[in-house]
Image (tube, rainbow, N blue to C red):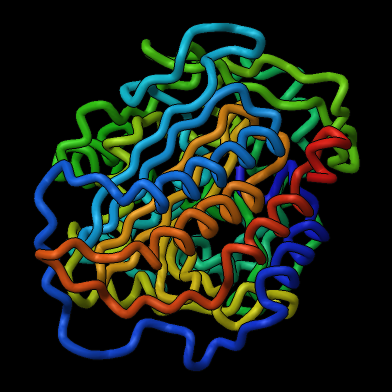
Length: 430
């Protein structure tokens, strides 16, 4: 999930690496008429651009310890790039394929918060509704609103760090939401409700329970009604907690064991392929594919399943803490990184990230099948792919957009090296 197994100090280090040379002002897409994006369907990015993307993804594989990856870049003015390097298992020889299913981790949060906004549109709940209206027996939630849970300004501690060793060592155990919630609520409050931003999977679990109470519907039906069916996500599912096997075809997922402090034991890599998504539930439990995740990434960034008012609320962002640069901000379940919008996350076995520029349509999706390095790592990889693709030359029939990113390819490469948890010595030197 989102804040583990990467310690907060590594998030801070990545933010400093990426933010050191750039200020927020003057680095976003320039206003102006939308470019004419008329690249024929199926066009491929130029060979030189594709080679740099291949190299970046190869670095991601090596530094993360993953055996395989899935990635796609879609630049409407220049072409597409899809890559499936590696194998489905460590020391195996079965190649990765684009139709493989994987756990999307914290990207699930973006779907959960979109369901909240759809319920707001229907008048069934409000963003400023107190959580206690729907969960009256939880005295610890007084003063917290539904919107604060999605924006991570509830002040609640994150349950995941304390339970991470158990999640990795016993992945098939089923966790009742109330047990997970109790662990998070027992943690020290980080701020008053509506105060400073701090990621909290506890808040999303609480939101899931509150919306179930408000709607009298389970989350499988809520996702299908508001997300999967409207967008035609036929390969995307929300498995029950006792459904520990991934649907075929799929790669295996891996993670290093972690100690109580969240430090990975790099010599103890576990196979996490069979896993109960109850450990993440509505914060990290959805399973999807590269194609479906591309569709969702665009819909989330553009607000295509929401009204204009709800989309504005979704992307009314707050800073991600004092150590993050101003261009890193957070909305209702998603990250705003300069002009790009998306999410990055982890669940034992898998890392995933999406980034989309709503103006140009540039879309990035990437998955790695080793979660040890954490969501900050895969976010840096997605940003690196974006920095390469943003400079792709247009075809003769299209006009390139003006897309300025507040980070460089070199900065993201350094962030990946800094964020790799179990990199080999020769890989780190390279």
